[in-house]
Each structure stands twice: as structure tokens, then as C-alpha cells.
Image (cartoon, rainbow, N blue to C red; front, side):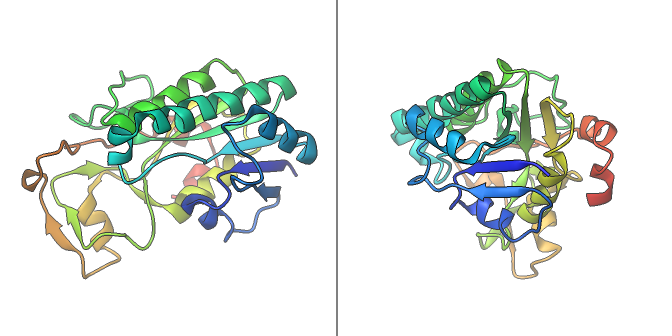
Length: 242
């Protein structure tokens, strides 16, 4: 059993994590308990909980225009904040697991492997890639480029011509928990079968309407689907969850 601390303990993904039983001792730390922008606050939390694993979910995410309108906040939280956490984990030899995004890929051809070139799709993804850079300087880190959607789907429409490898938050948590004591390090894509966003969500929600990326002036990925062979081959428990 590992002792685990989770940053962003009151966030959407962390709240899903809390619903699952785990054999590990997991502590969800809110911003008030551990401020990732304050290295001293991170250090105090690490000394208090003495974790084996640090799962980093804290981030500035949506609405996406926050990253366009307030880039300094995006840098402070997603790049510098992540770097602060990595530095503390290096000092204490703590495994660091970073929740990243499929949006670091260009979103044109799909079936992206971890070794493919990245070209973040928007400023949010640039900020997440900045956090990845800090992780890759630490050998005891694991970056998970996740393609996931919260359940229930928060919109009334979904794109029928934008393809991803989405899984629900709940599925992502099961995979994440299976990785806590694994030997996996480096970068792993995490997702499911390639589907349009509409086909994915409408399978569970009949009320969703079709939409098209042609209706929007802002750039929306055509195909940002993931190749998940690396995860399937290296994490034996993965196939049990998919």
C-alpha cells in the first residue's frame, strides 16, 4: 500500500477519484491545504504526509479562453506550479504522476503515438506541455496524456466530425489507480477507441444533438485520436479496464 497525495483535491477529476475505493492511502489536498504556487506550502504537505506518490491534478483548465485572456495565470499554475511540485518530489524521491492532455498533439491525422511530434492545439495545451517538460527532467515521473470527458457530458451538442479516443472520467480513474504502484515512467497515452465525440457521448445520452466543427470559427481538432498500444503492452492491468 502506497501513501499518495493528490493536488487539486477539490477539482472535478479529484472528486471522481474520491468515489473509488483504493488499496492505497490517498490524501486529497485542496488549494488551501497545499498551494502549488508556493514551494513552502508543497514542502510542508510532503513533510506532513510523507507520500510515496504525488498525483498532480491541480490545473487551470476551462473555460479555454482563460488561457488566451490571462496567460500569466496559465503560466503560474500549469507551468510554474507543476515545476514547483516536481522539484519537491525530486528532493524527496517521490514518484510524480502528471495528468496531461491529448491536446498536446496537432489534431490533424490521429492515431498519435507518444513518440510523435507535438504541436499543442491551444494555449491550454501549451501550458500543459510546459508542465510535461518539468516532468521529463525527473526520471521518477509518469506523464499521462489523457483523452477523457466528465460524466454526465456537460454540453447539449457534440461534434460528429471531431474524433478523439475519449473515455469517461470514471474509466480514467480506474486506469490511474492501477498505475500507482506500476513501474511505468515517461509518457503514456490514455484513452479508448477512436470515435467522434458525438458517437461516444450519444451511446449513453440519447438527448445529445449533432454538431459540426464547420459551425465554429475557432480551431477544433479534426482527429486527435490516440495510439494506446504502449499502455496496452506495458500495463497488464490495462486490458482488464477496457
